Image (cartoon, rainbow, N blue to C red):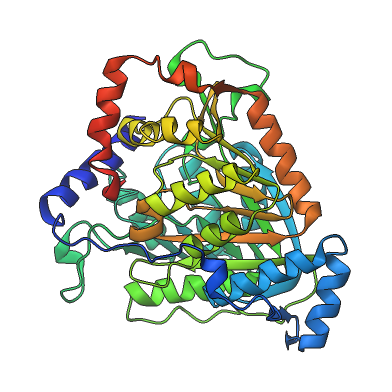
Length: 463
């Protein structure tokens, strides 16, 4: 936990010292759906390229027989907003908590035959980090091409020898946007821009993403799923979510990795079969969104549009919840038009400043009818949403300005009720293990907490 706090406070101090004058801003997304053509047909890519308009309509009508018109319209609007097509023929597996995710990721690494690409914010030198490092070294020695992209701030407390050992074994590693400006090529040193993605791609056929870093912190399941109960603060587990994707959509993950690698290194990736001929793995239709600082805000626009177009329900789970004004207004507007807006947020956090900055918005949201739940017995680190039961997203993006404006992030959107039902079950389980916060209760919170909230809100641009 001390390392996690250091990862937050050191970069925050440097940002405030050197970057306070260079403020970017999020785009205007108010009434985004009204600015787009709702009659457009969403583009769908399959194993042999882009489907015709007729083919897309036929596929989507088959996949989304209930409410297909609304979902197809949503898909078309989202493509217009993000510029990213849907991809059909995928299998998606929802992974609940760290132990399940780590097991699946290590299994995929062990089965690799040609290449492994890993992009992560945190890669710790601890029991789990060493286990992953050993597995990756073994595959490199077996002739599998292994490439690792890790964030400089996320690994700020990790000894250099940990990464040197992997380099000496033949693995190619790149430190994203080094904290030390002497390590940066040219004059493009932007300390505030971080690679917050958590992505593993194996053989161009299987991909993982979500909120889970390579750290023993996530190896302990949230305790409401564990047989043991906490006896000390250090016993508290972490609640997180990942997703495993198989099928043609893995190529989109791979392209985003290649692009991120190219942004940091002038040398090409070593030769490997990164883009094998895709095969149909399942029936899920997904959209893979990657966003970068100074880019086109794809993930932010997708979230904004889904919230604005919601008809029945908005169920959000967010580890760090410091939304911008437009997002707050959209959630309030949805609640006022009768949408069931529920948000599961941390009851305990690894970052006190972000924790209290989010609290500063509770009063306004609660007064508008938004229901807020605080998770018990675990540090919440998941970043997920399910809207109207048929639009779901899992990824690395928090609902805060830092994720939307300053970080490279990656989210998968899964369209349709089957996966939405899985997401709803996970959300309901989190709600059962949370405390509902009422407006009356909230307005009687201690004045000391109110002062912390007031102070934290001054830093919300950096959070």
